[in-house]
Length: 244
Image 1 (spheres, rainbow, N blue to C red):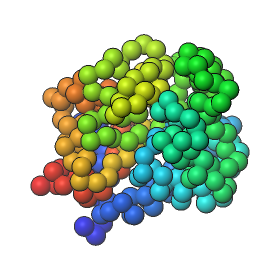
Image 2 (image 1 turned 90 degrees about the vertical axis):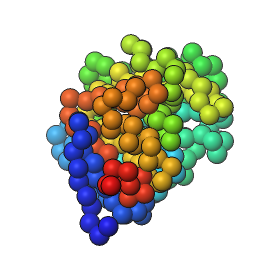
Image 3 (image 1 turned 120 degrees about the vertical axis):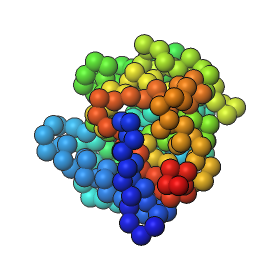
Image 4 (image 1 turned 90 degrees about the horizontal axis):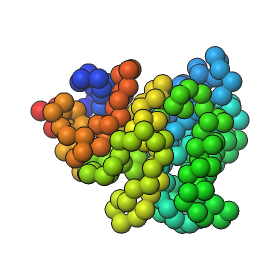
């Protein structure tokens, strides 16, 4: 595939690139432009980010862009309930990617730290900071970047769990670890929503996400809704079943 392929499917805009390298380059540029354009019209840019290896490469590219990072507020869509210095921590990954170089000027809210070891305290402080930094009811982000697990999960909204609540923050168990996650209610209130998908292992999950008859219980990523088109940035490997 020599050029990006665009497709629209039931509320989703697909942007399909040939490989992970091109995907990372194009998405980092898209996010950079979103930040630049938004802070022309409002004081700050609220950015909800995800963990994972594919986002990390995008964050590394973004951190080297000399933009007004001091006007950017960064929140995690979810976090593992682990020591923030653990390599399993999304915060740890961000500190070594997005929050390096020019990106170090951004405000980042770290969900867990040595001072916040109690789950309930961490949850209350996160909600408090969301109310402080974000506008809207529920609090909304200017841009939310989400991943897609091979089991259909996004953030820490895992299959067959109580994901769709009126709360803003929940705790879930996933892949052997306790996690804290923003809920569909909050994530869906974002002005712009992106799913980032790469690799052959995601083919079935991506196909199910786009299937209007697929159950939200089995594929919780379908719980993320928007009045705007949701963008999916993916590579050829993950989208093969959609191109046949």
